[in-house]
Length: 133
Image (cartoon, rainbow, N blue to C red; front, side, top):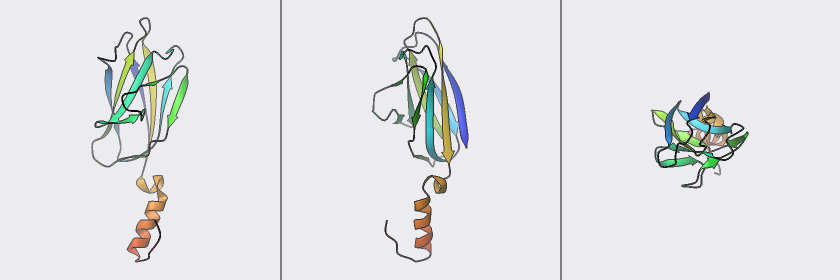
């Protein structure tokens, strides 16, 4: 499944009081996650993405993903097993003149698609065959 959101961050939104938005997803594995920073952000807009309290993007804890006129691709391979399957986006905007809108894309696939080797191992175990990890 493919999900997309546009998240508007008003001008002068500080890190101490960021915009937050819940992104609802389906159960499965996050196989790809892209964040687009439009032209004009000038590295003044930053975002983080969390699953519960775990920071998924960027992986460097307490850092912010920033950009300017480009898309930042990630491949986090993160399993969403519990329902509700959701992420929390947190963003700031140090620009004192313009609001900015980030575009977020997330691909969620079944576990068998994300890790076919695990499916093959499970099948072999069920058939009673011994295989190497």
